[in-house]
Structure formats: C-alpha cells, structure tokens
Length: 317
Image 1 (tube, helix red, strand yellow):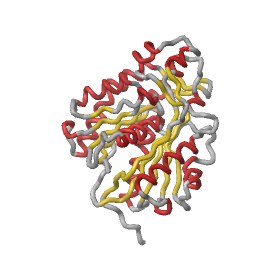
Image 2 (spheres, helix red, strand yellow):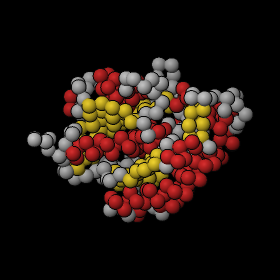
Image 3 (cartoon, helix red, strand yellow):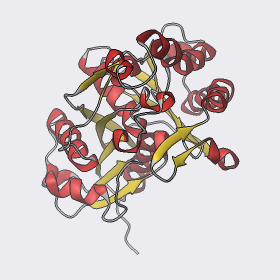
Image 4 (cartoon, helix red, strand yellow):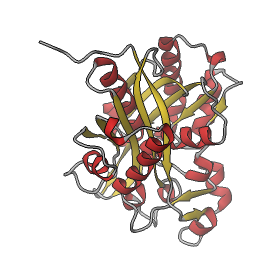
C-alpha cells in the first residue's frame, strides 16, 4: 500500500476576510427595540455590527474571504486540494457550502466539506486542516468560517438582536518543515447543549447568565492547556484571539491567562458576534493593522453552542 508522504508540520500562510457594507449601530437598534447604546455596551461591549444584505449568503461571503486569502498568499487555486467551511447558519443542509465555494474560486475537484461546531467551528476546522496536511491527505487547505446569523435572529428580542452579526474569515494552510499550528485542545459539554439553541426552530436563543458563567469559570483552563501542549509560556504570547462572543467574557478569560503583554482581540466592538467567522475575522484584521508581525505567537480559543470549545497556538506567517 502506497501512502501520500506526510508533512513535518502545517502552517497558515495567508488571511482573508469579508464583512457586509451595512453597518448597524446601537442607536439603530434602539429605534427597533427597548435598548440603548449604554445598555448594549455595558453588557456585551458592542458599538456596531455588520449585517448582510439580500445578496450576501454564507457561500458568497465565504468565497470572497477565501479568494482574498488565496490572493494574499499568492496561492493558485489549482494548488488547493481541500476546502473546509465552518458554519452553523446555512439555511439548507444540502449541498454543502464548501464544494460551492470551491467552484466559485476555480478550485478543481478538491475534497470539500462543512463543519458545524457553532462558534468553535473555525478552530475545529483549522485543526482538521492541520491534521490532513501532516497526515498526507492534503498539501494546501482553504479554511473558512462564514456566518449569516441575521437570518436566525428575532429582531424583536433585545437579548439576542444586539449581539449577532454576519461575515466571513479565511486562512490558507500549507505543508511546512516546522509546525506552525499547535496541538488542539478541544471538547464538549453536551449535557448543557440546551443553553444555546434555536427557539421555534428559527430563532437563536441562549441562557446568557449560564453561558457567561461557563465561559468565565471553565475556559481559561482550556486555553492554558493549549499553551502547555504547544510548549509556549503565557509570557511568550504576542496575542490572544478568542471567539468574539462578549467583551466582558473576552476580558475575563484574558485576565486569567496572566499574559499582560499579549494584544487582546476586541473585534466584537465593531463587528459583533459572528460565530465561527469571528476568530479568522479578528486574525485577518489584526494582521492587516500590523499588530501580528511575522513569527508572532497567537493563542486562539473558540467556544459556543453544543457546548463545544477548542484552543490552539498559531505562528503568524
């Protein structure tokens, strides 16, 4: 039996992103529901968010972000042999998003599948890409998180409509001589799956206080374990990029890492909660602003419905 040669490591070589042009401010929402800018910022830290237009879909946003990542890395579509899309908001189950995204980008006959681990989806997908490359199943992988949460929000419910938003983020993962994606620490708490679910099978609902307690008391240990497995001390971190769920959650977890020198991603302030798109969106925007120079060490942490979670250490190209 002949097997494809495995690679010593896998690493990210480029980022891409897409955000809809429609900006919805807290003042805009205050005209729809009983809320205010002060109320929203004090509870979730969001000032504004991007909401998709009628022509924006999970697939179109993913394709735009993926195309930007390919261009940024100088990667020919023909070199991609696997496409993974993390999403939990595609309205139809069949066909998957990944194959359609690949076709739009001119990627010929790649492996293509979707991952649904909710807000942890990108971190799950990134680990699958790394494993595929290191195992010899792929040489170059396009990984995308894309969400259109606005289609699943009850716009009369102030507890959720102020939080969620739309967008997509992407990375290209390729074989490398040395690892640039650390071991994943992932898991789930299925006995608490009812904390975040679809109400009436069409509206996102979450038990906010229960989710807040879970994230702020349990997830820092997951992040620390990912650092330990990668052989990285908190003091060596350049940045911490968690899922952009809630600014209070982000800052609470960051304090427990005891890495005061690390830049903390706070993309949620202007982007809202974009579920599986939030980590790659934040990475892409930080890299674009020059906050993540080549060789930077970054800790990512995804968490959300399921309840699922995943953390890993990355080296920035």
